[in-house]
Length: 273
Image (tube, rainbow, N blue to C red; front, top):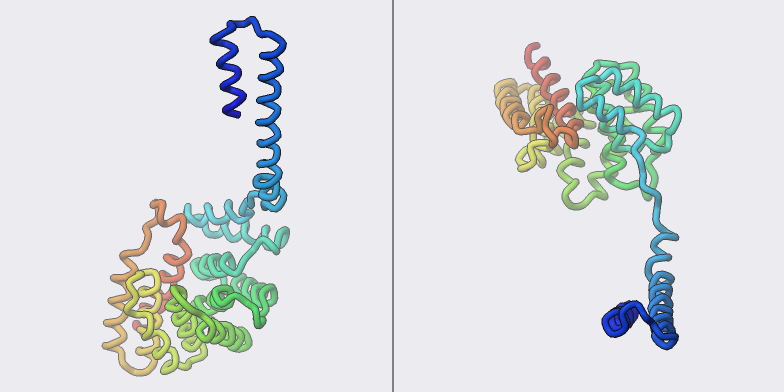
């Protein structure tokens, strides 16, 4: 290309607009060589990228998520359920986890139960299941205050056990909390405390607030109300550091906020008894 431009400039400067046949031939030959090089580059580097590129994905749940951000929970669930019927493959375990919290906020026990039965059927636990998918599928059920379906609780425990056994890295604190939540729902309070204890000192307040709330409930159920109330107070302080509605951060973290909110409200009610 530089060679072609150079020839064009030389012809323009030295000969004005009067080009001889030789000049035209030189220009054409220079451009021709450049074009061949560009075509070769295109075939070698660019075409394979185009051939294997995936089309840009548009999240069909985007409108439902925006409704949650705006606090329109019933409308969000209606939009989510339409997608679940019309485009079930578009829903991921993370989506199931996120909207599980919305069912909780609405106190829609029947809708939540139907949602989680669908999730467990849609995402059965296999040897190659991603650990985070197992944790999210299970947490969608056990986060609901008073979740008590024994079959689903045992299934959730199996999923979270898989996550803590196979999980690694930064997600582990979340997996410990989810497994502690599963054990708590099964009324295995000592086991729940042992798992939750691993995450109550995490720096991330999203993890810490949830872990502390369930630890508070586990300790309360074990007969230590004063210690439990102290843990609940710590959970509330951690919750105060979470993203606030109306902020950009909240548009990405609303599910963590709602899940922690459910846990803290449940713990508060428990300790009034």
